[in-house]
Every structure is written in C-alpha cells, then in structure tokens.
Length: 97
Image 1 (cartoon, rainbow, N blue to C red):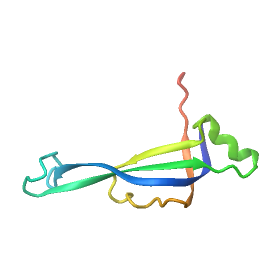
Image 2 (cartoon, helix red, strand yellow):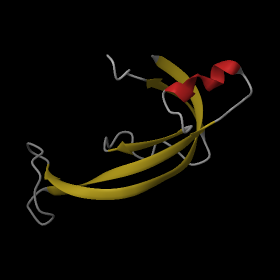
Image 3 (cartoon, helix red, strand yellow):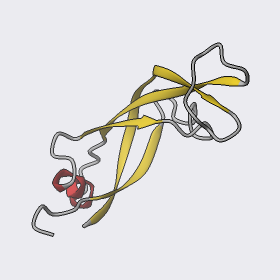
Image 4 (cartoon, rainbow, N blue to C red):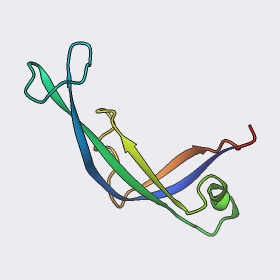
C-alpha cells in the first residue's frame, strides 16, 4: 500500500559523521589523505490532520503519526526545515507479502 500524507518537520539535526576517501569511497581515519567528513542527519516529522478522511490513510503505514528519517545523501542534507510542511509518500509492505 502506498499513501501520501502531509507532515510537518519538527526537527532536523546532525547525528554523526564518518570518514571516507573521495577516490573509491572507502572508509578511513579522519587524518588520512583526502578524507572528507560525511554528515548524517536525523529528520523528524509528525502528521498533520486536516479533518479530511483521506488524511488519515497514513495511519496504516505509521500508526504513531510520526516519522524519523536518517539521511546520508549530501544533496538532501539541509533540505528539510523545521516548521515546514511536506507531502510524503509512504509505502507500507505487509508482513505477509
């Protein structure tokens, strides 16, 4: 099942970093030649209920009404801003499948 629901970002924070070489992407120590820090971000969202029945469809995919994402893609880090509203698509895979 795939649903799209409206969520508000309630926080985004750097959670950890690890090191890697640019060439080949192998993990290495921070002081190795060519090492760059890779920032990881944790982003939290909570569902917005507007009163429309279709807005409740997310509850099967995330019954708590909240989501937490761990992001390591440098192009996406910093994209989500606290207080901003996003329509997020969620795919729920049944345990029986």
